[in-house]
Length: 96
Image (cartoon, rainbow, N blue to C red):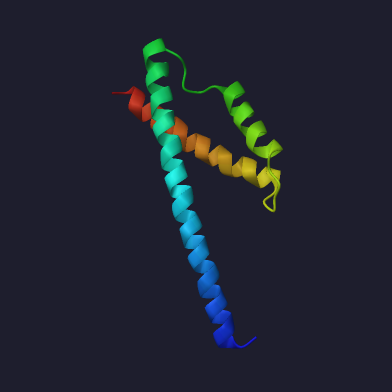
């Protein structure tokens, strides 16, 4: 493979990554909109933001259906971060 061919292939793959990243962003924003709705329900019902059992369900859901190549442990770490950000969204919205 020549250097030019490698650069062309890299550009194609990076373009695909950019599109996937935009899709992930859009899905995260959709998830956040639902989390905001959940936060309103929790606020009205005086329920806590942090629900460890629900978080465990989320982790099980994404890990059990994971077919790789990302390891289930890596998927869990990604979702730990996502959930942490979602808790922040709920906390911020529950102040209003």
